Image (cartoon, rainbow, N blue to C red; front, side, top):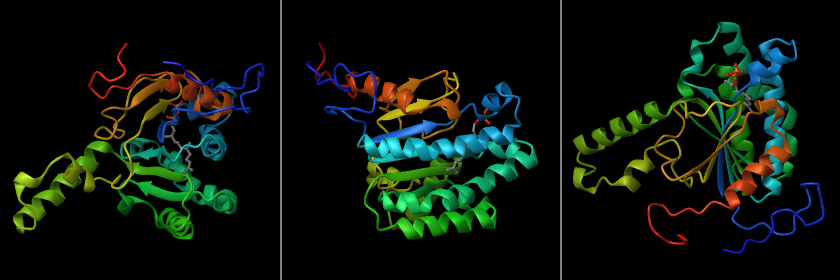
Length: 256
Ligand code: FPP
């Protein structure tokens, strides 16, 4: 199938685009390698997380510029509580710092902030900052920045099943009517299209309990770059690669 080039011909710079076709609507990113990035530079792990946070801003800007509609970023998993207390405390301060530093710009760019995950266990200051950002961006209809905070996919599916059982027990739902669409409504991602592309940085190639249900037909892209080094060019590489994938969703359409 003929593809219109993603990058303008005769230009080395990747920020000149002639035409974008086949852009993933929803990109989900596992931001890995902050600690190793810091270690490589002789810095404490915190410095890696701080740089990682600033890079979220860069990639949101690029995603917006490339016409992506939803960007889901894995910021903190339900398993990350196992980390040393001071590291957890530091990561929990980052949403507030991110919002403080970047919310005005994000509002200007019509970005809407949402989250997925179990909010209950988050510190009050984290919840408060995130809730304020959600509230202040709720009528924006541009890119959705969906931050996965205290997120775990198995837990998400489990709480969906628990809610469904309660609905059945109270006769609000009949078991025969529960199909994939109904179950998906009880996930944190309700209303969001499933990811088209999943990116993981730092050379690891696993899902780590991220969106297990939702990525059933997603494309995957891995890079050795640590998250703080994942720049516009690396992002464009992933998009270009995606652009040339043939998605068949189990069928035969477009098969050569
Ligand atoms: C994984 O790297 C990264 C995390 C667990 C934290 C990710 C958080 C951010 C990038 C900032 C959050 C941003 C916002 C907007 C809230 P790692 O620490 O596991 O790295 P390592 O595997 O090299 O040790």
